[in-house]
View (cartoon, rainbow, N blue to C red):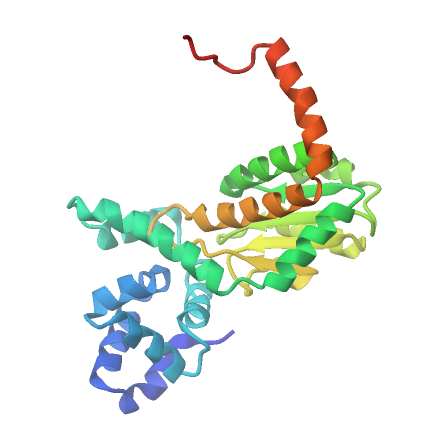
Amino acid sequence: MENVYQRIAANIGDMSKSHVRIATYIVENQTTAPFLTVGKLAKMAGVGDATVVRFATALGYSGYAEMQQYMQSSVQQQLTTTERLKISKEVYDQESSGVYEVFQDDISNIQATVEKLDEQAFHQAVGSLLKARKIYIIANRSAASLGVFLNYYLGIILQNTELIRSVEDSSEKLYDLGEEDVVLGISFSRYTKSTIQMFTYAKEKNAQTIAITDNLLSPLVPHADIPLAASSQMPSFIDSFVAPLSLINALITFVGKEKQTDIHERLDVLEGIWDHFDVFEKRKN
C-alpha cells in the first residue's frame, strides 16, 4: 500500500516554505490530518486552500482527494471510536463557530463527491436497478440507516427490494441469487466484515454488484461491477453520511424518473390506504 508519509519525507528537502508547513503538519498529526478537508488542513497549516491542492499534485497525486485516500487507508482501520472522538475535540473548537465548521465539512463532502462522481457509472447503476429481477441491499451498523432509506423508496418504486443486515439471520434469502439480480453494498470505513462477506458472495454468484462506499480503496470495490464513491470524512467519531445520502437521493430520483407511470398509479393506491388507516396527521382548519 502506498505510504504517503514516506513520499512526503523523501520530497520535503525540495519543497517551498508553504509546502513544508503542510508536510510538517501532516507528519506530526498523522491521525488527524487524513480526516481534514482542504480548507481545514489549510487553516491548520496556515496556508491557502489552493496551496494544499498544489502540495498534493506536487507529490504526484491527481489532487487532494487521492492523497487523502492514501492517508486515510494507513490510519483509519486502526483508529478506535474513542480515538476519533478525541480528534473531534482537537479540531472543532468550543466557540459558536465550531458548529458552523461541522456544517462546512458536510458541504465539503458533497462538493468532493460531485467533483469525483463517475457519471457513466452512476447511470449504469440506475440501469441495473431498473432491469433487476430482485435487488438486495446490504448495509450494517451505522450504514444501515442509508440502507433503510434506500430500501424504503426503491420498494415503493420497484417493489422488488430486500434489505439484508445480518449474514446469520438473512443468508438464506440469497439462496437463489443469480445474474439477473442486483446486490447493492453500502459500507464506509471502518468497513463491516459481514457486508464485505455477503458482497463477495454475491459477486461469486454472478449477481450484478453495486458498491456505495467512501473511496476506490474500499474493500468493496474489487468485488463491485459498479463502484460509486461518496465522501464521508469527518474528524469525529461519526461518519458524515450527508454526501452518501445525496448520492442515494440521486439514484432514487433517476430510477423514479424512468418509472413515473407506475409510481403515479401506485402512489394513488397508497394514498387511499394511508387515508383509510389515518397514517398522517391532518391539519385542523
